[in-house]
Figure 1 (cartoon, rainbow, N blue to C red):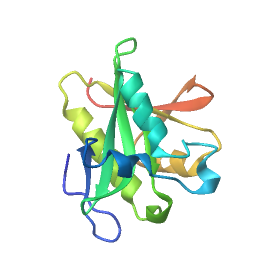
Figure 2: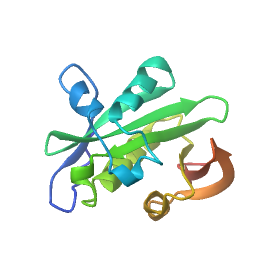
Figure 3: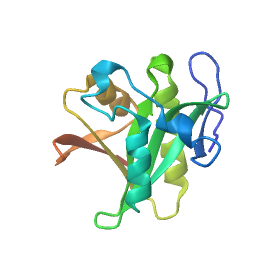
Figure 4: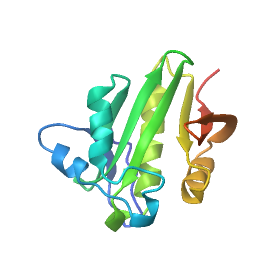
Length: 158
């Protein structure tokens, strides 16, 4: 998935299926130490979720073709929403707009799916960086919680 978005360094940010050629690089993605209270310590945890639970689908986040992160999406038939989860940018690549470009790319792609009516995601209440990012992209808290995290939604179409 490539919509021509770039990070602050001008690198093209795109999402790719996780496969034989990139799964190890995705598995090794690690956030900053202080972020481990909010996200998995390694991308490998999210890859396992995608393989063990049918509702999640992992994608590699690439900047100029180099794996620098992970994001996943799922569909919940119970509430009819598409969910974004497992947003993880490697510590060495944070603060460059990669996470923003990745979420914007996934949001756009999911929003183009005919059955997509609403996008949802969740974040820990103490994770102010994620709250600012998601709110700046148009997600608003719903008042619901998912595993002690704030649920935020973005309507796609009526």
